[in-house]
Amino acid sequence: MRDCVIIGGGPAGLTAAIYLARFHLNIAVIDAGKSRALWIPETHNHAGFPDGIAGVDLLDRMREQAVKYGTKFIQGRVSRITREGESAPFVLEFGHGQVEASKILMATGVVNRRPAIHEDLHARALAEGRLRYCPVCDGFEVTDKNVAVIGTGDKGLSEAIFLRGFTNRVTLVCPEAVHDLDDAACQKADHFGIKRIDGPTLVEGIDNDGINLRVGSSVISFDSVYPALGSDVNNMLAQMAGVKCSETGAIIVDTHQRTSVQDIYAAGDVVLGLDQISHAMGEGGVAAVAIRNDLSDTAPLLR
Image (cartoon, rainbow, N blue to C red; front, side, top):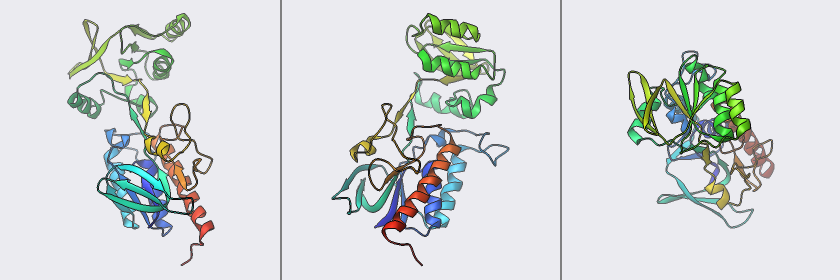
């Protein structure tokens, strides 16, 4: 039986794995290989990498570090979590196998909602920096560029206003037929110099001029596009285990990343907070220390 099983191999889960393995605990990471960090062609706001680092390279380094200290990795997706009682271990089922654990750390993250775009074009646009999902991460890279935000309502307008801190050429493009903006929102957009175009919108292609959006019957080119369509929280396992979630679906935790269910913890984007690698890693560290200390309270960890 494992002292802890971590569900998810993104920045939060891997940070926790490194900590827990270095605490001499018997742990495993079950990872489906779907971390959003894998989408990042190169991040320049992660401390310690002044020339930037690709998301896949960062995760590879973290995984290597976790393995160095004894972390077991299992490729797969957890489909079911059961427990006979509070004193019994959890049973996690995945594919054709299962594993038992005293503690569970959920680091299952979220999934970005995509605009209308072909899968192959989506991958290419991300790799070339034409399609971006995080203005906090990479707004600097579109400084003084011609940028579109695909979205509407409060979320779309808020993201467009945020990007105005990097460029004065921001257009809010509606994903559907007509913008959901009242008079006050339109006045606010005008105040910030944000253009507005009704849809529907399709990401059509990439050429030397940039990324092309088919908006209604017209094709408009931009240097980069930011979808502001929200995200879906991967909380299915949490709900299965009876963990309390917020109205938006985020897992609710205390200051030590403990959930409402004893022996289940959560960290990273699946928890309400700033969706940033550094923030996820910090939560992973906090969760790992709490897990170690809670295990010690039950049975002192001595060597």
